[in-house]
Image (cartoon, rainbow, N blue to C red; front, side, top):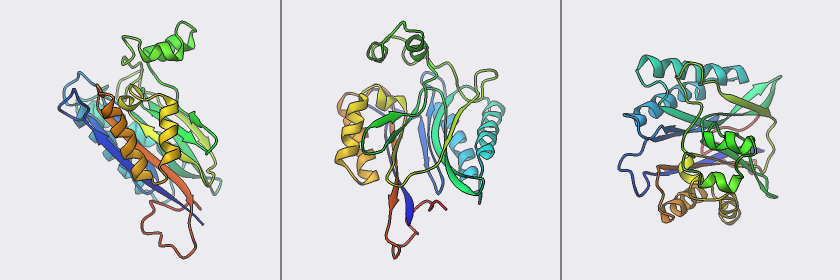
Length: 249
C-alpha cells in the first residue's frame, strides 16, 4: 500500500517584511504560488490562486484537463480582481487517466518542481524567466544565470493575457519518489546539490521542508522562501490513511 505525505515551510526572508508566497498541501494537489515582488498585494494574488487550487483538490476524480481548467479559472479570477500578472505558480497534482493514477506537474513562472528518486535530483519544470531564455540560447551558463542581474524577471505570469499559459507534464507515479516544490527564494540561495543533500539527510517531509527554508534564510535570503516536500511512500496495510492527503489508486 502507498500513500502521499507532504510538509511545507515558508519564511519572508531577511529583506522583506511581507511574505507574498502561498502554498497548498492538500489531498491530491500540492503547489506554491509566488506573488510577484515589487507589485502591490502580491500576497493577495497568490492567495487567490491557491484558493482556486483548493477547489481542484476537492474534486473526487480529477483528470489532467481539470488541472488546466483550474489554472484557467485562477487566471480569470486574478484578472477580475485586478491582480492579473501578479503571481507565478508551480505544483503537482495526482489525477486519473485511463483509470490509472498519474502525476501532473505544472508551472507558470520561475517557481520549480524537482523530483528525487534516491539516485539524484532532477528539475522537472523549466523556468519562464529572462535568465533561462539566455541559458537556452547558449548565452549564459546555468552557474552564470544564478548571478545574472535580471534573474528575477519572469516571462510568464498567471492572469496576464498572452503570457499566462502553463506548462504541463504527465507521468505515472512510482513508490519511493520525492518531490520538492519551491519558490525562487529557495533556488536563489541553494544550489541543486544542496537541495539534494537535505533530501538525503532528512527522511520526514516536514523536517526536510523546514531545513531547506532554514538554510536559505541562513544564506541571507533576499526574497520570500517557500518549500513543499511531497513523499510517495510505502506504508503498512494496518496504518491509518487519515494522515495522508491521498492514496494513489
